[in-house]
Amino acid sequence: MPETTGRATPQLDDLYRDILLDHYRKPRHKGHLDDANRKADGANPLCGDQVTVEARVSADGRIEDVAFTGTGCSISQASTSMMAAFVYGRTADEALAAVGTFQTMMLTGEAPPDEVGDIEALAGVAKFPVRVKCASLGWKTLEQALKDRTVDASAPVTTDEGKE
Amino acid sequence: MMRQSFNYGTDANVHRVYDLDAIRRDFPILKREVNGKTLVYLDNAATSQKPVQVIAELTRYYRDYNANVHRGVHTLSQEATAAYEGAREIVARFIGAKDPCEIIWTRNTTESINLVAHTWARANLVAGDEIVISEIEHHSNIVPWQMLRDDVGVVLRYIPMLQDGTLDMAAAKRLIGPKTKLLAITQMSNALGTIVPVAELAALAHAQGAIVLVDGAQGVPHLPTDVYAMGADFLAFSAHKMLGPTGVGVLWGRMELLEAMPPFMGGGDMILSVTMQHSTWNDVPHKFEAGTPNIADTIAFGTAIEYLEALGMEAVRAHERELLDYALDRMVDVPGVTLYGPIDRSIRGGVVSFGLEGVHPHDIGQVLDSYGVAIRAGHHCAQPVMARLEIPATARASFYIYNTRAEIDALVDAMREVVRYFGGVHA
Ligand SMILES: Cc1ncc(COP(=O)(O)O)c(C=O)c1O
Image 1 (cartoon, each protein chain N blue to C red):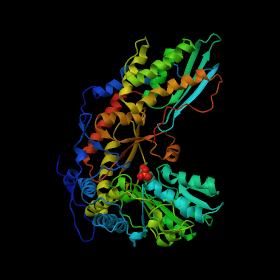
Image 2: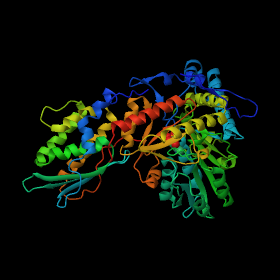
Image 3: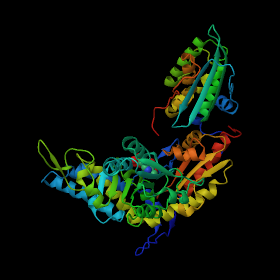
Image 4: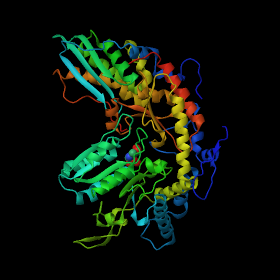
């Protein structure tokens, strides 16, 4: 029977870190950009997670602004918010490298050695394999937006390979 | 646990006591711990747990009489064949069918429906013919018909779902017309628990000369079922949702239809004779059962049905109805809860689809799991239902013969924890 003391189980607290719940409650960079020159959609149809990532990248490759919209579970939305906060103001190359770092973290469950700010809070997701695709959605969508130089990529990105 | 026994015995001759403690003792998995808590298994619409009797029969087959069926004069093969064919008789009796030969073994409901789409439908339907289904169907009773539409040019029509998850019967009367050749309809919605008035719809379809296929994946495990009373021409269901093993499904069909249908797959067991030029088909049901079947699981499915028969399906329904009443009455008090599905509980199975304000169903499912409470979160393979409700997903608790009020208390307590955990989020 559930206890009614404070937070839920320790295991759950590993997944839903305070910082993650904070990003879910108060998403950063949520909205649209009027002058985006990069954009991609991502969706995990089986979960109903959905994000759109927009960015304005300068001629010398800097992400001058970034924004996202979307709906879905706390992990997908918080992870996308953390992603946006992290890549804002960095170069596209740095952002793509961060996507790689993030993916490694999802495999190992260990916080990366380099400074990645709040993102380290997502390391706990690796212990919940079914939620990794939720956490990855925003990152894969950003990757798509940055790689695909057209403003509207055709097929939405998905990290959903499972079956319901 | 508190001893609970109720008198549900409404069957004519036996007045049984529904002994919940005794039932629970037959399901060892219910003693399992999950995340340090006793498992509360409320995902029965996805698949049910299995009693020791079924597990024992599986082992007994492999230990004592494992042999291929239909092809040996030796003792083991005869024993295996007798048990395997015996399961056909048990299933026929359970659904009120006249002839065990009308029972065709498949892998699951999905395969049963696809069998009809590939054989009966392709032999009998032409471009312009209409198939009527509904918006509350499981994907397995939508996609085969969409594929048929793309191949053959039949027209697919959907009986709309009303906001409470029931079907728009006035629209159904308009949709079922002279062009309708098939009504393919669920007996009970897996997403919302809606019990569909199948007999009424079947009468409309038959009046137009159409054939009626019933998706019994949810209905047969939970409701007393009689194929003639419901007006079915075909009935599809799965063993795994009714105490049986995975990998066994049933297609029941009226013999005249089955006899006139072409086979499904070609190979051993489904033929009478093969020359290098030509083969002749075996009789129904073997015509539809090519190759070595799933012998052990089919036999154990017979054991599962005997278990349900011993309880009585009236009693099973009464038990689930009681749990449904208790669950709805308690869940409605959880802050921020939305309950989906029929208001009229007499047309609702033991399924409660719900949402909590500001919390995605997957997060609900995750927090509940940390309390050992297993529910399903998602679209439940019924995306048209979600589209109608304009939500991406729901959380769903679904009950079966072994669930208790105490387990519903655990669900409700854990739901309150979800609210606390995500408190103040209004996404
Ligand atoms: C109403 C309904 N139809 C069909 C199916 C498909 O059953 P199976 O996966 O056993 O083929 C299900 C199972 O979820 C169901 O609930």
